[in-house]
Image 1 (cartoon, rainbow, N blue to C red):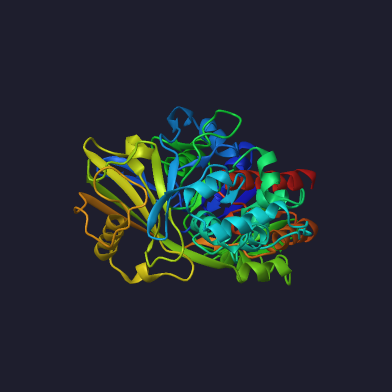
Image 2: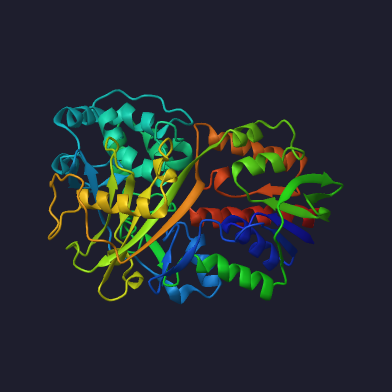
Length: 487
């Protein structure tokens, strides 16, 4: 069986690996660097991720693939888990009992000072307001604000969920990015009680930027996230080495212009011509996917949805300071920035606390995330100016000496970093509009009916997070392999 995989991100490489393990002769088409957003490079002599830095452990395909490839002994849990929120000019602890920002307990929320007294009273209304029918999908903001009020949605949901996707929860599909909230909202009259009874504050997927994970998966005692001592970038590089070296796969550095059904198989069309394959997996971002599949399922509504998908661009600014610049508590993994400030920074990860192997002795490493949908001021700054702005914003948020909550500071310089690196990720994060999952389900059904030799996988198709995209790639591979075997 001859199989083509279009796209060399983690979903495409996972599909290629699965097909190769099933005995297929695999060709991967990727004009750029394989691995997509998974990239680890040297920073001051240590391997430091430029994109996502952790795998969500409760989706087992991520750590499972690492172990399958012989990387199991490199898996490591984050050493820090507690996060803070910069809101209203003050640093505040994130309250306990949050599920993607939605409160399962109101007392910790009240103690945090994040929400005003009127906002707390409105949140209490969730316990007494009548049940509202839950639609198949809604924006994350509308779903939460309908039960807890707009202040909770603005001050908690927006910085937590919005920062993960570098977008706004007013436009993000709850069915796609927060299905646990949507399920809980349909379980009874009170969203708070439904979240509390679920017994788990499920974290979100990794994005190419700082994260603020829970240290343990509730109820299991296991780490909720896992990183790699050699960086997540070593996962796709190992995949490529094993695919080419052990499985005999081909990696072709050409862009694919179209897929065309041809008899019982599919033609892959590049600038060099066309090549026939028994099956193909398309694992490319939304605009390219809409173009590739245009002649496979012409007129399919899901293609129009893909073509209209918006993307946000972000940058990760990695900074190294002399140890002692800030006296940060060892359990502090990072901070988020609530909407309403003029900061470029949307989040900051204290890499030395979170991943001690990132830092050389005497050095503190932090990663600052900038950029979100509608705010690309950073894109016009050169690396030096952008790094300087991030240092100034850190000086506004983090006081020198022991960290104390509730310190209101103005922009102030901090000591110059001993090292800087700016990683720019244009059009990195798809903004999943309401109805996204339904549209992608329709697309998959259309492919199964009219072109079962073609399958899709990747973040643009609604699988959120690195492990979920590994699972999606392998599932797509099994789907087309099963079709070819039956045929």
